[in-house]
Amino acid sequence: MTSMQELQVLVILCRFFSSSMADGVKNTVFMMIFTSPGGKPDSTTNDRMLFLGKLISLAISMKSSLLLNCAGVWMQQRGCSKEHLLGIAKTVSDDHFVLSPNKAELTKWVELSPHFTSCFLSTVSEIYGRTGTINQFKPPPRLLLEVTTEWIASSTTLALAPLLINLQPLLPKGSIVMTAVTPFVGLIRWCVEIPLLRLLCQIRDKEEDEIHATEDLESKLLLGLLESMNEKPNLEHRLQQPEVVSPRQMCILIKGVAESFSEIPAEYHTHKLAQTSLDRLGQALQIALASGCLYGNTHELFQALRQLPRNRLLQIIIYRHT
Picture (tube, rainbow, N blue to C red):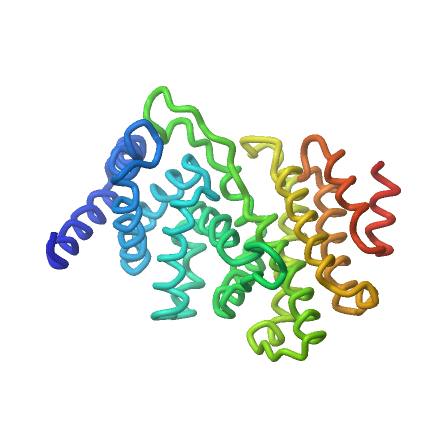
């Protein structure tokens, strides 16, 4: 297929999914086109995902909320942390936050499709973050962090959007609605891990302008996430599942933080940046527990907490909840 032919197909599909046809029909077609037979990756998956990344970027440029809604439903059903979805999010992120950024247009995503935007955040927060040791922590581009912070701060329900939609009537007949994933844990990871990377850079006398200039953004993002979790009790009657923050995912986050501290000399564990990281983790945990967002077995989570350096807030949380 030539580039011109590909563009023509993209425009045709964009028009189709932007039509007034019933949502269930459009989502069924979307699933058929972009899901491999049997639901498992095959030899066509990479090409499908590459094409879908371009289609989503076109939908954003054309402000097609209907197409983005279809993409959000598909992402939730496929699982926002799946490897092939990470590739799509990287394509979209590069197109709109790196290659041709337009902050004024980016802030409008929330209005176009809250569901897609929330699913995008769940996926992109997996791309930028811990990829191994703290040395391999990949902070988000500044513009992505700025816009994400504005999105979360401007809408206390954005991070909860996947839980506020009943997908059953939107899916092909006989489909099972998959557990929705919210972006809370991934975005909390940014707020908790970036101070540790900043501390490690100070210890090693390295200059990292990208992470030294984002402290206010991290604080504002965390505040927005805490306010969003506090909305959960007010939305109880609309939530499609009780789990907002997965104990398993939060436990993985805590173990990652413990690994980061293992690479930081013990004499720096009381450093302001180290304690800022632990304070932020404690604030997120406290609100998640108090609001009922953290749902399920938390035994392993508290076991992991005990492996972290001493922090007054974390000690209080461990004492109160175990």
